[in-house]
Image (cartoon, rainbow over all chains, first blue to last red; front, side, top):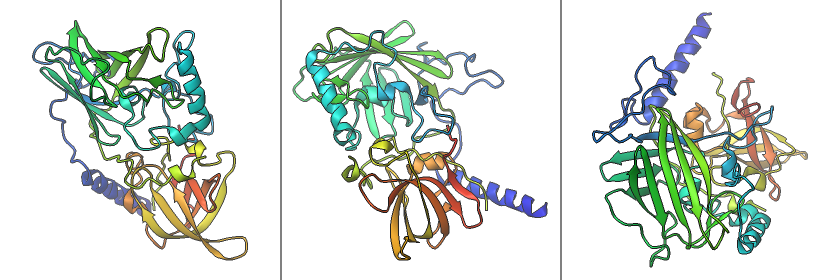
Length: 269
Length: 118
């Protein structure tokens, strides 16, 4: 009994030491705290001084892909990580060019996935990759800081017009401008590079594409992002999917630098 | 000394199934000779005897340090010289390379176990 107590104390001491070895615990600056004794889905949506919903906080993607009874053999994630068309009625409306491209990407698999090569994976996959992201919202600007590869994204919400689709210096993350439509932050992004993947099977996004994201904090703990993809080179019609995110309170981002010690690519078949 | 349970995801940068055969496992018993607690995935190197009694070095891959940290497995949870038994999914194309499923200490406690982990 005494030994068990000693082990428990030792474990607690070690755990405390480990927790304090990262970010010291404490309230996150600029992030609303949930009122005590109120369920996360019932607590009111926090608002900024100008009355807009406050999206600030650390968020993780929905993980709705079931694991088998014996457990997931890989990271638990959402269905749209693998197939962004999951839930889209009738599936994605690929153009013949895009349908052929997806076949090639499927055949080559992980060997040619930009994610395997540790490249930034773009806006849509940053909403499905099962790592954390931090939203920082200030007047006229929303920043999204991604754990994966310490990747930043800025949404300029200061009245600037969107960037043209075929811009001089295309970007993997695109160029994002935002405006408020009631309680919804509407973000348009263009100026993409030509070879982006929206999911692990390789659904494409090209330089002719425009993404429209509608960010809506539907409860204290849930952020709904409706993403519309309009890319006439890859799809015969625009399509929309919903990528839910859930608040991860009282935590901070940590390091995930993919190229630090990457050894897998050479062994992937 | 204490039970640590963790998932061992690889998906954060590639699919585990693309590199490892998830339909079978190997059990490797040996001594830790090197630890790389690095992104995107940790590696533990284990000297173990093969079926002929020869010592071979296994490279055993695990989750990312941040995933392990959040599951309660830490950089000092293992030390060089520790005797451990690892159950791993073997690599499809490379010998003595595996994706760790469970790590068990000599006293039988599990350091990492993704069996039944959601």
